Amino acid sequence: MANERGQRGGRFFTIAGVWLAGLVGVAFLYQLVTRPAQWNSLSLQETVLFLPGWVAPLLAPSAFAGGLAVSAISRDLAVILRGALLALLTYVLLAWGVPLAEHRLSGLHGIDVDSQYPFGPYTLGGLLKTREAVRANPPEAYAHGMSRPLENPPNWWTYLLHSMLAVSGFTLLAALMGKEAGVATRAIPPPGRANVRWGLGLATMVAFFLAETLASSWVRSDPEASGVLAGWVALSVPLVELAILRLVARSQATDRHASASSGV
Image (cartoon, rainbow, N blue to C red; front, side, top):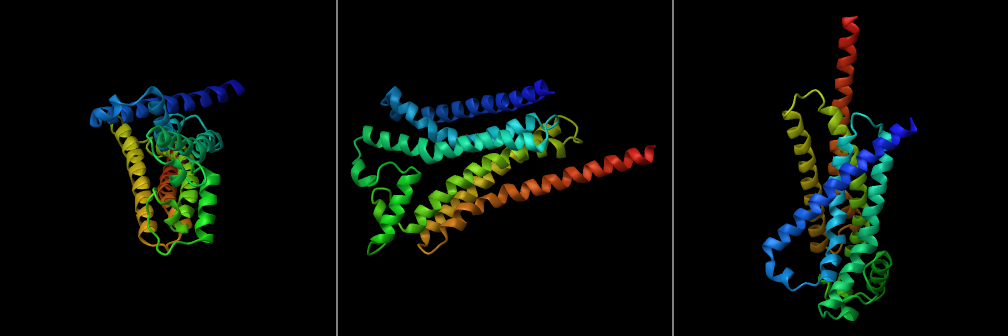
């Protein structure tokens, strides 16, 4: 039994890892093709520093693939625990890995890091310190722009703090959605089944990050907008889809039970 659980966990992380490597590779090739001049002048160190910013948002589709791969053999709790590990990795990257890499890249490119990062890299602590500084000494007029961080309104920094948690939560939900998508589409014959499953995954990813973009624009356009609400509102997309997938899966299970009972 323990060996079977280990094999299921291994399959989840193997499939998620393969998808993550593939997606990061695609992102790198896209950048290489669309911006060849930029990459020709970059050192290996600079190239590596771009990776955290690519990996963090791509963990969600990778988690979806992992959940889908074990949809027929794993329980919800097992998928939640595995998805939670990827969600934790997402948060660590967003709260520390990406800010530290961006700070280092700025220094390598000759940007005045003292003025752009008055309290150091925009890690969790840096964001909190910057928000408190703006609240304590608000500018005459708010203006968005990372070159003038102390002129950004407090709700912008609040949004950034909460959006990191929301994106990490999305990684966890994506693993569950992959499992539920596999269960809910089990009755669809191949090859249409695979098309429906990956179509659901792609649509969810696009919808979530589009909602994130719209929420970001809302905060940028209104200093009085709720940074907390803007940070979390995009999670309504996967939550609604997850609820629908569960209803479909339960309905199918009920139909199969009824059919089996009537057959007896």
